[in-house]
Image 1 (tube, rainbow, N blue to C red):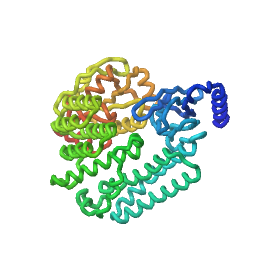
Image 2 (tube, rainbow, N blue to C red; image 1 turned 45 degrees about the vertical axis):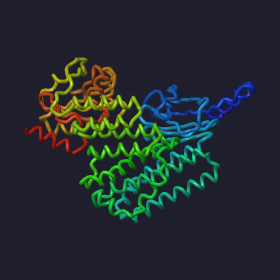
Image 3 (tube, one colour; image 1 turned 30 degrees about the vertical axis):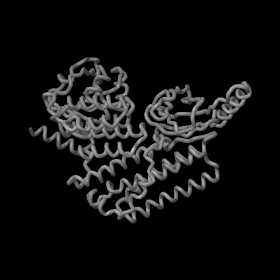
Image 4 (tube, rainbow, N blue to C red; image 1 turned 90 degrees about the horizontal axis):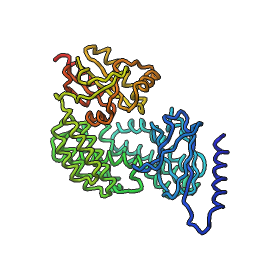
Length: 475
């Protein structure tokens, strides 16, 4: 059945049912959301808003789904297919149908039905911004005045198109809010990013050479916009904005002239500025947590963790965030270079259980993969193969971080044309993820022949890993 007949049946059924309602009962606020997922990553989709899961909806035999929102508020919701997510705007009485091919997720997403025009506009705006990334990067190498002129032209063209759309289609106020925020906050983001991606001078020199009005847009920033709190352009902007103003503050009382995201003082400045400027509890706590975790995952200075954690705990009111941050700090203390790697149990392709430490006989690279991230699965194994060829003095181990059987693991590897040698999974996944702090999944351990940690945060795709491997060989 094509989408249009299917949609017609849905609307017809809805109209019929509404005639049967008791007119004395309060009117129910509802809307329909359905569609088709081509090449699905899983047999379900998750519908959520903010950090709250609304429902899990399973696909039928034709990879289609349908869901009715009841007694809900208009707003921006999200659907997640097990691999990628995208947002959609829905109002009462909307009847939205989507069609998406996971091979080209965002590019293939189409909308039909009541609510189609606004959602199509928003996804087109999202894709247009993505396509313009290289153009913005290119003009960011210009002098500030020329950069501002060209960037402002991009913004004005988008605002003009938005005005034409809202006039023609009588767009909702909520749609206009999101569309204008997309345009404005992506413009603001590019202005904030300019000192970081202009390669002509150091960040300190660039700041000093900017026109006085370059950051005048900051007067328009709403740090506490509850409507936009989950909107990607707004969230991305706030993260970069605090990177920037913290660096400007940091330059005032330090001798640094370049950006160093592992500087403790810089990160303390950032937490302080977030605490001073943001009053909305949700937005503040999320920004504090994001920057706390970002520092812990990037910095190799384990001795700095407690200082930043103390500052974080003084400012955050989210108990869950505090517990997670404390656990992560304690975990990385156990993973300090020179410590022996935790003695976890791993399972090989023959279901044989071994101690991770006992498997380490030579200098070793340990990396991880997740069934939900097919791209990382492929590129990490390709890179491991390349490193193994260049550095035969090392053993390389791949460990899956999902609660799956050896048979399921073997099937996934074989489907991706990967062999089963040196492939393992954890006997206790949750314990391993906590003890080894395996978030993000692309982190890599470099170990010496005695299973002592050389680097718990190596990056397979950074050239510095090869310098570390050579240094270990030459010890």
